[in-house]
Image (cartoon, rainbow, N blue to C red; front, side):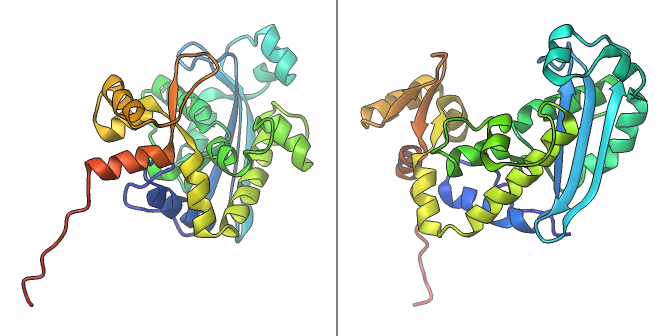
Length: 275
């Protein structure tokens, strides 16, 4: 299987050509698709009670599939049972947490870690290994979040939540909010998105990327400027600005950010002294 290696370029890259280079190589990669069900939303307070993993590539299809109910010796809150159908009695009959994480350590470190809202699953996986006194880190170049690509390629849909996408595309995967069903749904979605991307000309992709909204806080890291300073520069240029629903995040279009970046960091001209 061919791993993705694009020299530091990742899905979080600012520049459009870097993003295209990242996405264009994913169809040849081994994808390690994961989903976790948890007792809450905060990794340091909640525990993983179910995890599923599917591995494969667009060329070979699924080559490995595994799912565990995890006995983390915790009670499952009623609201989680209502959402997932997972009860305390079910997890008490599951596999011991230490056994699960020992079994999964090697395969989770392979290929490109993939998930729908991957940041959530990744943070819980990291937390579980930290409880064991172990580290678990995947570089940005080996992470692929299907939510991010969905916002680009499925912008016309009213929602990019996984249950909504399952219904929209008719994925036959079973009940949502169960780890294996959601992992299979993410696998099918990843295949659909990457195939669609492969069929999209570069110029069309550049136009779509240019319209993407990028959080100011993420852009500030690339520019090595404070948010206030970068916002002042962008607003001074008359760039479009959008505020998140909660009103606590400013976002700007990628094309405007890239234009400012190139103005601030023009390419260095090399002199040919041989002539």
